[in-house]
Image (cartoon, rainbow, N blue to C red; front, side, top):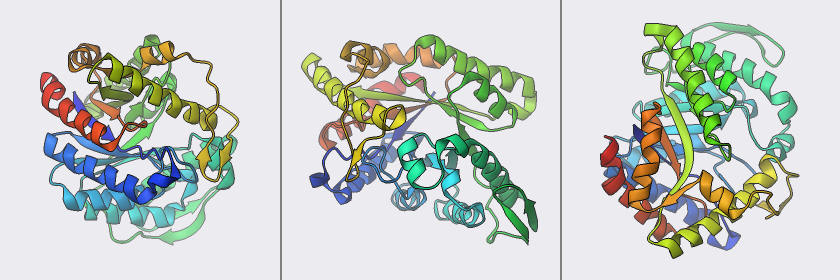
Length: 338
């Protein structure tokens, strides 16, 4: 089982500034490279202060220039927000500038607030995403592409330069629904999923959807991977664990607001709204614990066949504490799963 660090760019207060926050994320990426992590992940979001990364490909290039081995995953970029004729060229350039360490995670969008303001409302984004993905695949794998569709209509064109590899960078699909995971795997995509606050059975169903499709693909599916995203943190003691849990609760009070809630945002800062889930219930769905507990809690993930665990440690803790958690995970947890 491989490990990835999600550079989720959570700006708790404007006073901290985006400049400081992105420098923190950059230092975390360098530390992950030194610590032997498989990858770091960058999530595209606009107009809000959680998962705040409006330019993931730019950041991927900056990270690649300062690191040696680590892969950089866009987990995920929101295809309906881009023109694929332009974006395909940006992806290819990023593949070149990262020395072929880019993994392109894609999705249709998750927060109704930003999608509506950017003229791609969620209720219409699935259809636009599906066509955008088809167009992107065609532009990355073929020359002289002509397209006639609902969202794209153009005569033959060739995106230049051409990709470093035959089909461009690996593409990873963000999917939550087990049946959706099955269908996307059957199409030959790597999968990124998360149970969020769902129960253990949901995660098992997600894994089953991937495994069924991979088995049916036979040799064609051998190289496909399943990545799972979870909030995680190495706590120092019970007091520290409680403090980190409270930070995570505040983070999710904002996350829920734009994910399933009313989308109340003031000057770019997501309002903190009451949550239905209790602190204790949240604790059950997160991985905030000691080194020993972390090893115990991660073993079932390896047993059920998770290929890569994407760890989100950026939910409000100080940069110093987060760097310590990243390093302790690399030194004391990761070796148990290598």
